[in-house]
Image (cartoon, rainbow, N blue to C red):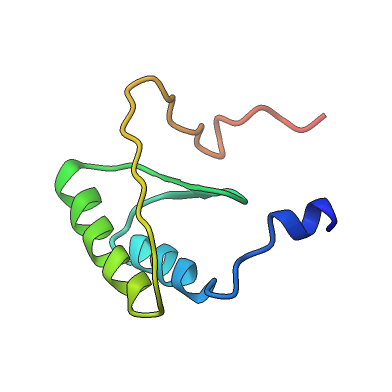
Length: 86
């Protein structure tokens, strides 16, 4: 198994696509990684979007929703605030 195989999407990856589509449909910003997705916003929007996104995921097969709430994670910099590439 190569390192790329270890982080390849599972066969049910369409459920993950449904989640990110739903979060974006709610107008939430996303930072998608190989193992997790970070989103943020106001309480009502985030939790309504998570509820709908989980329903969208399980419509495609078994799914687990894990949420971490933190006040220690800085928000990603806006593109105009990001450091220039060297």
